Length: 131
Image 1 (cartoon, helix red, strand yellow):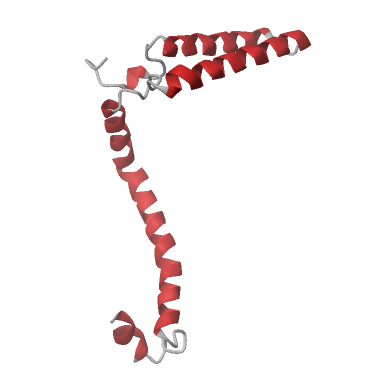
Image 2: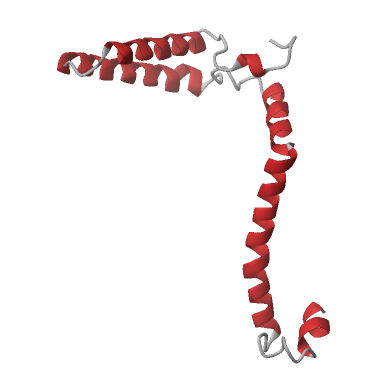
């Protein structure tokens, strides 16, 4: 309909779009990226993304906790053991600085808190009165 009304009888546009197929392809090539970019701009500009993120944090109790099941029982302990083994290798090679050792210990302490079911991370961003 748009092609018939705006392009087919227009002497300036009809040479550029000789058929409905060409018009549709050009329209899609322009409209899809323009729509995506407009949506991204709108989302970042209006605060919709920040509001959605805060609602998701409130609605999801596992944002700052280890998810029960395979993450808490297998994945997190495996990562801790891997990190400890890597630290031992780095100690033997004398490649770990005291600052790196401190950072490593901090991360392991957080992992231990996660394994015990305690929250870690930016829990201060959660609304007051919520655990």
